[in-house]
Image 1 (tube, one colour):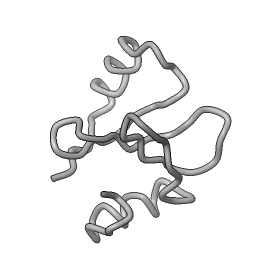
Image 2 (tube, rainbow, N blue to C red):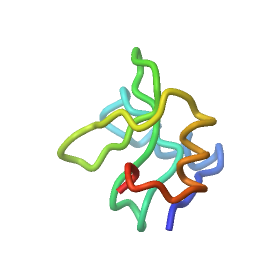
Image 3 (cartoon, rainbow, N blue to C red):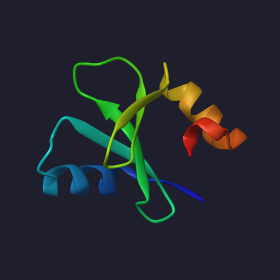
Image 4 (cartoon, rainbow, N blue to C red):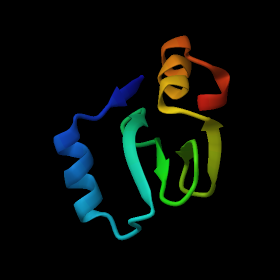
Length: 74
């Protein structure tokens, strides 16, 4: 149920976003929560609106977790 965003959508959403510190590259269940990068921090984060949580150290690890359908993503 994850949608990986193409570069065009990443740029469009970033341009329209008020908070420029979180760069989204995927969402779950039509924007239930987002997965992306936080400027100035290392790793990949999940943002559910209420909190931003580190889920992976690298982009490759995040993709692996998405493919694995890991519980940490929910």
